[in-house]
Amino acid sequence: MKKLWEKYADILLYLFFGGLTTVVSLSVYWACGHLLDLSATVSNVISWIGAVAFAFVTNKPFVFKSHDWSWKVLGSELSKFLGCRIGSGVLETAVIFVTVDVLLWNDMLMKIIMQIVVVILNYIGSKLLVFRK
Image (tube, rainbow, N blue to C red):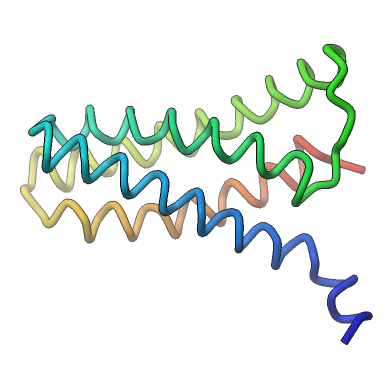
């Protein structure tokens, strides 16, 4: 059991914290769209900001075991992290705009589908580009 944990710990931790990040994103999105009556696109951008902030402060130490918070390391990791997240965020927002704001598909269904895509893309980006060992 210990060997399995050691082999898959980063994936399992990423799925756990990715799940929490998804809860943050969906909650903020829902509040913006359903309580504040903002468009799906605007709601998605706001939820993206909250999710990215949460993801960075959890993924850095807990998932990818990066504990150096010096300005040099933090600046490098944060800029790469934001670069990856901007890419997946633009994709997600574009899909939300087309499917929800233009085609009027169910907003929460599309947000959940895109969250699955985003979690996968962000794991790959974080693992290969941001928190490389």
